[in-house]
Image 1 (spheres, rainbow, N blue to C red):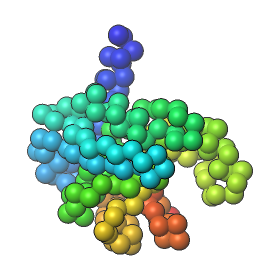
Image 2 (cartoon, rainbow, N blue to C red):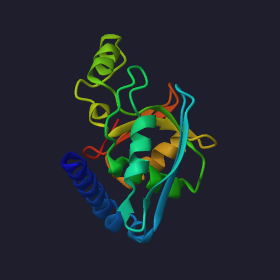
Image 3 (spheres, one colour):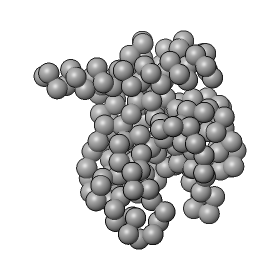
Image 4 (tube, rainbow, N blue to C red):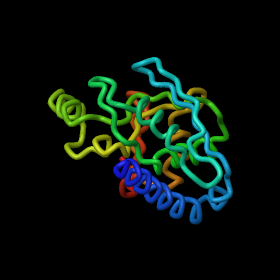
Length: 180
């Protein structure tokens, strides 16, 4: 019970920090949004999740666990806590793009074993990838040009944004603001 309480407090603190940074600086309306909703479709597992992960001023623990599950390392099945700030970035991007389309997820959390395997394969994977911390997602938005999604993601200035037009996906994370 104590560890669950600590986890809830940590999630709250991380999400509150992201909201404070993003909500007051770039998107003042975020602080007043009562519900934050996302739809995720994982392209490798076929799973789909429609979630209201934030309502009435708080993150919903059960919904965060559902997000953790769908964004697990699909190769190993390992589940890790996903940074609620990442969900807020996706929510803000959805608002910016004026879409309710599901995010097509290529990958979320990546276990150390998967990360090392991808590095050995020469996939350009960072040794200390934000995916290892549950703070990154690779995705595309159906019905939107990748270049437009990239431009919108960069404008959020909420973390790292990687643009992979050859592979047709975008990377977003809650690390330092940087672009590649």
